[in-house]
Image (cartoon, helix red, strand yellow):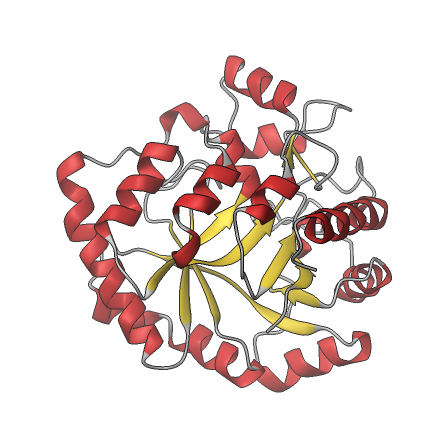
Length: 299
């Protein structure tokens, strides 16, 4: 598959705080995404989870189903138990013809708690990485047997946030466990996404593209904010995240570090849609991604 530009609906409706964008219909989200030249969508809370209903929702807009977030709890469960718990999600993705299976450890995350600052996030003990990585690899192998690719989402507020934690995760796992490179979470977490892309090129199978307002990130850290308060912004102010081209990430460098990449490049902007018009920001982000992909020789 050549590179295709998709989107996550989180710029229109938030999944962790569903009242944010809560009145925006799925039809509005899909129509505006298509108007921004987006050709695929990840799943969100407003999407049907039955195959035929989901196909019917996407079809009028010519949208492909990219895949979607699936919370895992491998710190508490075995790989076999996790695989069984994921049956509905597995079946849905296979029915829609996508192999992108996005996972993130959420058994102890704080990113969905508006009252918990990021400073209180969980930290893995050094001795816990090896057994956890073995379970991730086992789970990934079970998914691979069904034609699905495990794409692990490093994320603020979780056990895989910093560069050192991404490195520890990758060292503790092996193929077919893959990495979802998220440029926004990498940057805010203190990593250089282009260097991560180069380091783990062979195991990066999915890319999320959002940008970072570094001044907002520094202010959020100084004020010890929760993840949700930081991304939604204080008062009338915008938050930490925005679309590519509106922040600090060098996307040309990221794409140059991914030679031969084939798959989805997914636009994200975890913003309050009442402050940041989703269609206007989506158009801005897509335009910037196309220009950077072309400059890097990938599009």
